[in-house]
Image (cartoon, rainbow over all chains, first blue to last red; front, side, top):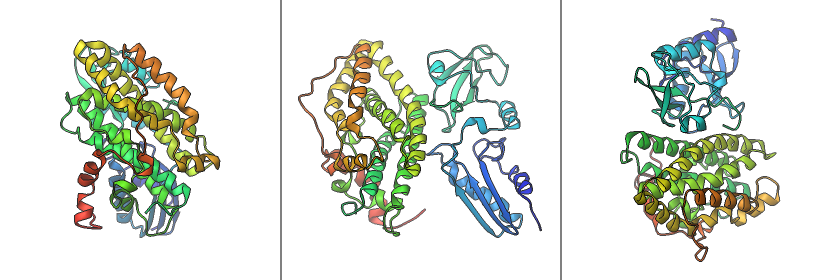
Length: 166
Length: 253
């Protein structure tokens, strides 16, 4: 068995975020460092939100995947920098989010605009931009609750934190 | 556990204590919020703040003996060793009072974390940066609710004025430096909270006035949290939060 860093990335594409199963940990953009040395593996990964309860589970799932692939000495470290932002989600990841029914992070709308009823977020069901914020917080730390005014579908919005100081 | 430690350790524990106790308080709302969305909002905030407490405690562990753990810091200290602000241990009261406490806390902490994120001490700055982003998000939420409740109905206004009157005596402590704050700011590691006092007071006074609330007088100022002198409420929080570790020491999930 000889793996390269790219092989490990391909492997990790099969590890899904436990709370958003259509998004792999690679598409989520939390894999920052991969060092392969024979069957030894070091991974530097980034936490999304401080209190996100998925953090420990993700580490476990990654460990399991790599162990099954043959790695025996696996070190997984949560790095404090760089800071994870929604800018790190891959274009494929953005598409899967929409298909799954979660509106993807949108840089053109800030959270204070949403709070004050201004929204350019598109409904993942009917693509209408007549949407509004129900709550700035959702079922997980990374999402807010929204609803479409046209098709009336309530949906989740993946909060955008790609803008500095927001 | 904290008395004979380095100033940096005490400082990090102090940051963690504010977060831990506020988080524990907010978690009491879980399943009891006025509407589902706001129940979820508050538990999200509680979880963020618990995450912050953990990061500060974990970093504190790097500055003391090897046997120290974040769980020991959280679960093995009694009220007199806790250094959190008295504001964060105050009972939730009604929804309005919880929101008001959160607003006062967020208003100060967002300024504080913003300054702290600029520190040359990298490991502290990195955590402060994340705390700043989260606190800004919470701040927008708590600010909107203070405004909505104060300016909505007469009942709402009365309750928000009552909340402000009850909490005002505790908020001063946010901008009063502890002995640890003074040592740490003298070393240039963190800002002196007193330096943020004017900007903080200016911001909350003008916003609360805009919300048609009357700023209470400053006759009573409660302090002491940083020295371990707490209101009686903290004991009840600790009794519940620490029960398992007290009854079954070092038990793990």
